[in-house]
Length: 254
Length: 203
Image (tube, rainbow over the protein chains, first blue to last red):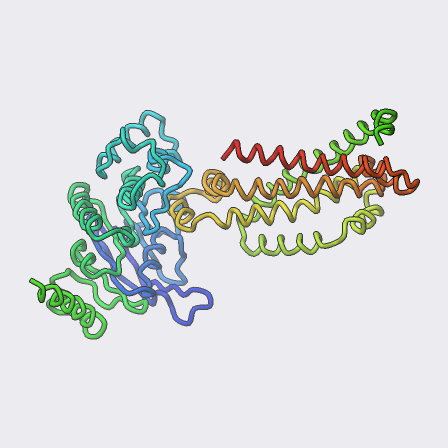
């Protein structure tokens, strides 16, 4: 089954010279880990936000597990999607446990169920509940905050996770660790992941397939191996070249 | 001056209570109306900008003129005074509340929306608690301004401390002028301190 289907989707923001997305079509199968790669302004965040309807498309159709997102209640669509952003967006006046319980509370789960689920989620993202659940976000490191953000997004076991440069503000060691844990999480849960990044290594490491956007259009959408072997002319080729260049820089010091 | 206080303390007390009554009534209605307008503003950015602009224009009308303008509509007396005070307060309250709500971190509001909070849940559970400081600041300004404008309301027979003050001016009675102005200043300062205390306690 297809988790996400875009059919000729276009989006132009008011006052912008060109479209953020232009006639974009693709499908993501259920259980896939797809990374969306491209420079700033290529439309990758727009693409993600069209799925949970933080933005509305000008034209075209977006299906989520076979259902047109336009036809379903907005709030219901969003509660069924795990959403993680670079700014993390933890609620500073709520404790870690309260943050993680956001959507369960919106769905009016009973207290015992919420408590059990919160503990379970914190353990899943590598935070000992007894130590962390009563802390406030400001008392956590950046990496810990994003772990909480991830736990919060996973709370009601959504079938699909949308992640917008979630590790963009983290140091490279924390980042590498969280990348590995995310891959493990994907293997264990079989959820569908759409992960936006501008970092080519991250995109190729995490993605089963990589969707490369340039100027609001799909430049290439394939497995990392296929893209590296046969990069599309132009933008993708120069992107892969720049990554190779970087590799040579490090090799010089071996 | 002390003499006047000893002889007419009952009159002063009555005026003070009258003043307090006008202020409290005005604040009560102001907060209720501002809350409703804030809710309304959640649904349209355009509307909220227009409203604040409109209120700022109204706010720039001098209070004496505003009181006089309202007389043909609602007559002399307390009711008119309270209406005018409520109108003035809308600008002070709404501008502060909306600026506070708007100042909440974008990442926080985006995460809340993305997780499927409704507009009202976002307002009530996230934005308002995080904008508490600005809301209380608005309340303090509105309260102080209400106490002082209520003094002027005596000019349309609304009573209160302003009545003593205007009486004193008419008859050149220094004691009356001083008690009228001192008490209203003290009331404003006291009310402000009280809210400041509440603000610190809740922080």
